[in-house]
Length: 638
Image 1 (cartoon, rainbow, N blue to C red):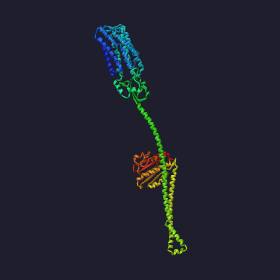
Image 2 (cartoon, helix red, strand yellow; image 1 turned 90 degrees about the vertical axis):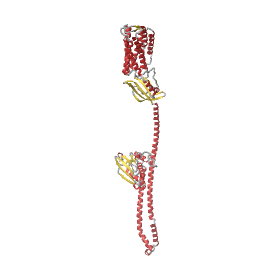
Image 3 (cartoon, rainbow, N blue to C red; image 1 turned 120 degrees about the vertical axis):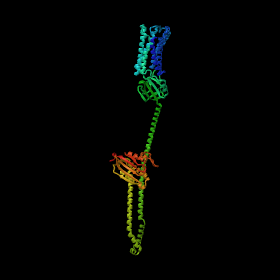
Image 4 (cartoon, rainbow, N blue to C red; image 1 turned 60 degrees about the vertical axis):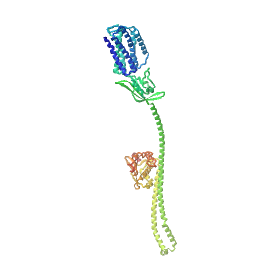
């Protein structure tokens, strides 16, 4: 048995292991298929070598077998170069087709002539091929020259890449080729062809074991050939709506699904690899990580917008490349921009409407103000007319006292006295009528004194009524022309409000209680503050309609509490429910069937104008309400 057969068998086994691993990664990957083609060719060469050593064939048959082996060892270097082209995604160029042509020519020569393998000759380790005239040119042109060109490609690519793992993998491939070629040169060229020695065994087919060992190291330690995407993954990516771009460690695009192609407007070229930086995204950078970051791309059909997530992906701690996911949000952005435009238009309309509402509100408040002025004037006239009616009644009673039966009797007595003036003594002494007449005159003094006292009393009441009229008119006139903020005495405001509403207070039998403590004057608009007081008195009067007439109490107070000057108006009327306390001052809020909701709202605005505040307190329905007007003490008009 020829024990040298174990050399090609061991090399064959290593190649089968490596081919099996590459096949398990992805049998449809161009890179893997190129490696399988290279490894399969080596395996066939090693099988032929094993047969030639183990079969103990006759020289003629062995010569034929050695010539067949040229079909496997001549293209080996080119097929490895082809694998490198696929691995580096290098497009086929002139050197590629040159080496392909040389291999084709020499394979034909090797199979059909004896110029490469002349015949089989015996040696102590078995039959070996005798080299023909073109053996050395074939080895140089089909093995050493492609290998040298491969080394140049690898060195150039190593200098360009910044990926440490890729550089290591490529260097392992390069050193494997270099050592394999060196060993082959020593075994096949130096000793057998140049030195003509036959003391070393012919093991040319096993020299590639060195290269296989380096490839195995790249696979085991650096996950070589693990970059390709499986068809199942491609199929999955092809079905999703988001764009998917996968790049290798060199940031060259290895895969794009249809959504990414349509969005970016580019396709992977079989001639030239596309780098991530060539994507027309602004301001995208392939060297950064992103998570849902917005980028734009300018297209002839208009601007496109995408959310991009970019992240490296790895396996076993080794970075394979970059995964880029593009979510097309152009439609959403267009909708958002349209919404922004509509919002801007809506805001403009709202501003216009608000301006109109403010104008309307101002008009309503002015109308309310004028209405309150009219109500103040009407109330004043009403109070004056009530007092004048009382004056008329009193004067009528006084007039009746002096023009009644007593005056008639006095006229009759005077006529009787005038008729008997000439016989006055006889008439008084002897005539009974004379005695009655004298008694009448004696009683007349007391009667007239009574009339005069009564008239004096009536005239005193008339004087008081006239003074009340003067007070009311003076109070009303004191507020008619106040149009600016000035110094105001709160106690005087309360007193004037009570005076001006005295008719209403009396008519509805309201008991007024004042607790007007001395407080600093405040800066306020006197007329508007009076309007606030009248509005509160009116509201209190309406709220106390649910209370019996002898129990209606309206309380006014002035005091300083917690560095604030307060004016309070409290009633014991219907009260305010808790859920309404925050709404009583809102525009349009009212609980009255005929209310418009601007009374207390305008009062609140008046207080804000005057640098103060207004609030309400109530313990609930049926428990009355207290309105508090307050100003900061440090802003008082001292």
